[in-house]
Image (tube, rainbow, N blue to C red; front, side):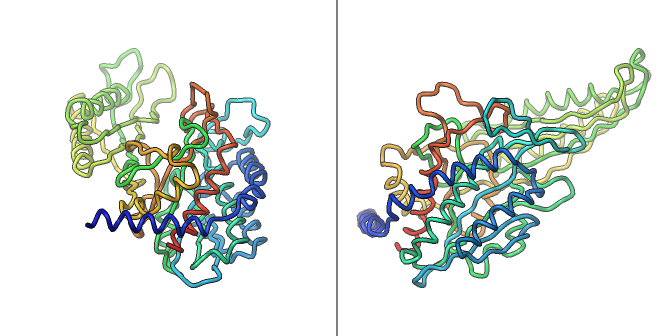
Length: 424
């Protein structure tokens, strides 16, 4: 009986949704603008907590639409509030706005040539994860919805979030700081939706997963202490670089020999090693920086405990010492099962039922997860690969590329999700 009732509710909801859809003309009116915005942001990327010009552009656009705007949220975030013609609940839509310390490697006419400094190292800056598309899509959604307030039973909050990739060391930022500063209150948000472009999924497709869909992420820093000596006489000191290599090797055994990967996948990656100043000097210390990705709380506890034990034990075995510190970057991105089921017909409506795919969880992480810890949310993936391509460059790489023809579907999806949720 319960299953039949849910089916009736979903069918009724789908019919109601269809009656409140935005016209294709309204969507088409913003398509070229969305592409132009995306290319502007791509050519002018800014690092986490430094998205000053990006925020100015966003705020100017929202104000031009008559949307109430708040700036400086979580340092550089922008929040817009659009009140519909009829009373109702509050739904939030989120786009992340920061870029990465990656030097772009392609011949796009809007290629980024921006240079900056990250952790003391000169680097290029690139939207190598598609946040430029997220900004442009949500700006397009804001414009479409501002022309259709008669279809909105409630309020829509537009959240343009800085520092999704993580704030610089020693700073707060991202979704956690936005929540701390009250972004989900005044008025209180009832549900939140977000999307992520995917370079490996063809344009026109949407992917989703109820429940845990992206991993919890921990950043870790290991400091290894040895004893400095001449490179020709390693026996005269303790080599922290050698110890660091053994620690890295040990970490991988936690994944390959101690973690039950039949439960969920897990990953330990060391992404940065710093040690020494000269080829013939064994230095006094070394530093490792990396990330742990988990989708199961018990596995997370095991992995962090074993990493802590190994760090100390391996260093002492080779005559040195070492410490490890963890910093939580994201929780598990968890799509509320009931909300996902209710909103699935909307995604199928805008993309076509055969273009909406149920997928497995990914070990990528998203601080959208912090919003979902407070209110029910749905986070889905939008195809950004040119149809027919056989190779897609991964996110966070110099060759990362997105096909702009997939952006309008993102505008349609977030727009219709908002209207259908408020009118259901």
